Image (cartoon, rainbow, N blue to C red; front, top):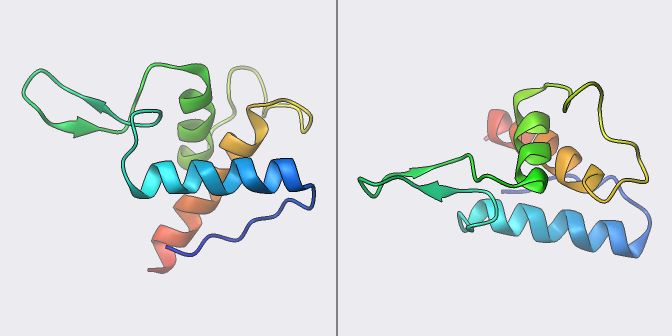
Length: 88
């Protein structure tokens, strides 16, 4: 999957790329396994919540995370993964 990385700062670019990699390999930071062994896309952590809010096109809590928040690249990655999956 090719996602456009919108960040210019190296640390944010790397975080964005890491999040997309977690999504592609169904990493435990974004996905959870049910008691029946089914993998579902809703792990219970705040960074995961930011990713899935971006993926679903929702605001996270009251608003989109601040651009300086550590969760912002996760939110943007969710949004860009969703866009890339619609194109594919």
